[in-house]
Amino acid sequence: MKIVFTGTPEFAVPTLTGLIAHHDVILVVTQPDRPKGRGKKLSESPVKVCAKEHNITVIQPESLKKNDEVYNIIKKADPDVIVVTAYGNILPKEILELPQYGCINVHASLLPRYRGAAPINWAIINGENITGITIMKMNQRPDAGDIILSKEVEICEKDNALTLTDKLSRIGADALLKALDMIKNNAAVFKMQDESQATYAPMLTKKIGHINWNRSMKEIINLVRGTWPWPGAYFLLNGKMIKVIECSKNKDLKGNPGEVLEANREGLYVGCNDGSIMITVLQPEGKRAMNVDEYLRGNKLERGTILE
Image (cartoon, rainbow, N blue to C red; front, top):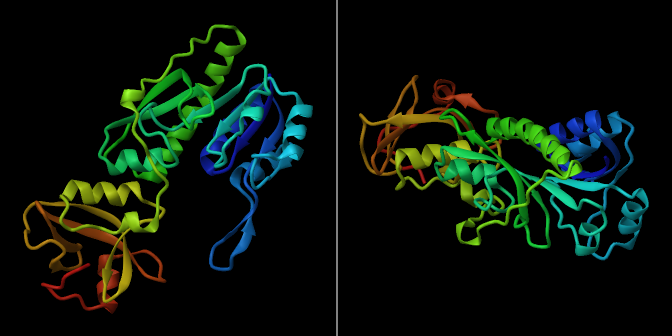
């Protein structure tokens, strides 16, 4: 099949490479190069890097809405299908209607649950045990199109947003290839989503990572897992942000929420509403990640200190 692919982050790369191996990817649409890192140097998206390695034409519009130039480029390419994987821009109606088989989306949740920009993060933050991949035919409403197929995936206790993203990206690539075969062979059954079951996964902000010590051990650990590597779960000490990289439950020590109960080589023990968590790896503001033992060598943290 002749395919136009639209996508941006690392999550979309396995899907693109799978399509390149099995179909004819004639054009890639991705986000413009963005400033990245402390030096704010322009950085190409992972999808653009992959497309260039395979000598595929890349375009990078800021928006597709009312963009005649992009519309004409895609129309001239005459794709059988447009595949969308974590692109980051809305496809307008005129583009949705261009391909013979429509626009097919790879979404990282079991729709209609967790529609939106950050389904992987929110599934972990909310303590879900199961998530998955949904392949759907897009319509004008975000993540509300008819489902072609879904694949359940277990969220392991040690999964964070980074590891789960990697897992789902590979499963999503395989699921898409299967769905395209079904579409090509007229074997696809399109199932409407149950709107009554819809939930949403809005874009993450830095504020979401601020730890509320009045939460349970499980909720705090899920926040740490679900916000890594960005924006990261954090607390404030003397007005400075400290990110929590790794932590675990501790039922033995109890105290006030946010209170430092113990700080030693093994970890930093902080009270929450049903016990405490033991922080083993953290990242002080402006510094690299380090274990608690290393942090305490240069920073005094007394028992009874309240973390905000």
